[in-house]
Image 1 (cartoon, rainbow, N blue to C red):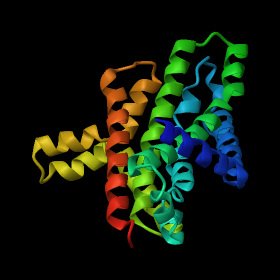
Image 2 (cartoon, one colour):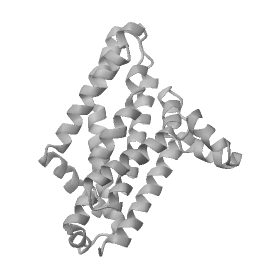
Image 3 (cartoon, rainbow, N blue to C red):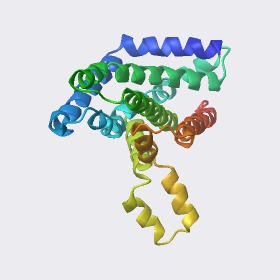
Image 4 (cartoon, helix red, strand yellow):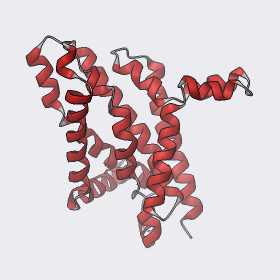
Length: 244
């Protein structure tokens, strides 16, 4: 754990040395507010809840999360610094976990800074704050899952732009996996077990359940297991390519 903490602090500091973290946070806050108050019709709805806020999070994350994950490993591989990193008394697991947690902390900070929207809805009405807390938890878990996917895509290539494109494509596929139009495409030829498996991979479905204020252990475990699987895949990929 100590090694993970060292990597975490180093990487988190590196985000704020460059403009990356600031740009990510500002864009996220501006878009979250715009989607909530304008596209989501926050005032026109006349309801004291944050549904217009949370409903757009998957689509905000679709592009913003790959933007902060694309350099997690592609730059290390391109510059060859991954070999220097591996000369330190740490394992690939430590490095992958530390880098992932730093990126997740950056996303969590951006999410936490949306608190004025929460204050606004409490000022205007009497919302179910328990459901709002649950929505924030679901959003944070979804961000972590998408970051783990982005980490895996970054480990695949030396090129950050390619990592970004792969990250967006993979996240888009996982977000839409449970939609009827996607499942209908499988029903024509695949057994029901495969269709159910594809449906279970949908980030959107699991997030929407939590965002409604319903904490189902299966949804939480889905995101936790997804993070673990994609981070493990990152370790395998880096181990295969670290001598490239």
